[in-house]
Image (cartoon, helix red, strand yellow):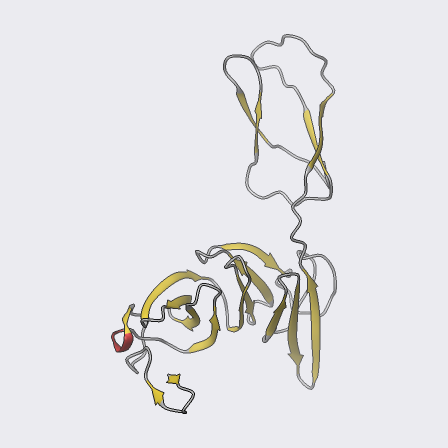
Length: 220
């Protein structure tokens, strides 16, 4: 619904029937919407349930489109940072999800196990996280509740990307044959978490070589 300054209530978007159909105004449908948040782009964003949990965008003209679907088990908190990223509390899976502006998950905070353990993003535990509050893109507060006990947890967001401190190899300069393995170590300014298979381009003459990351620990 839309409520004016004069307290006039009108239907802004939604047919009143359950569904996840995109459309304009009453031509769209929602199923169990739980959270709504205004983005810096002037659009409203709604989390609702379907076959999976869905982020929907509503423009000022009441045009409803689906941003993305994602695996979650009860979303009861939604915030949007200045870069358009979504921060979502996944109550049933005891996680906090960060998704980009396209709705794709780029970070999961929490081990997925219920608890109240502090720690880095991959080892900390949450117990049914619900409401969240984002402050200046640097701090996220999370409300949790377990029976008659409640917590407010604080997540410090590091927005400074690590930088490469050095690139080195135990192999000396020279000419090597095809199939020869040359170990290369890339050291970063802080500990990093590697996902996927990063690649490094080597200057090897007229045709550069591309090598895959194999292993490492900490900042190396």
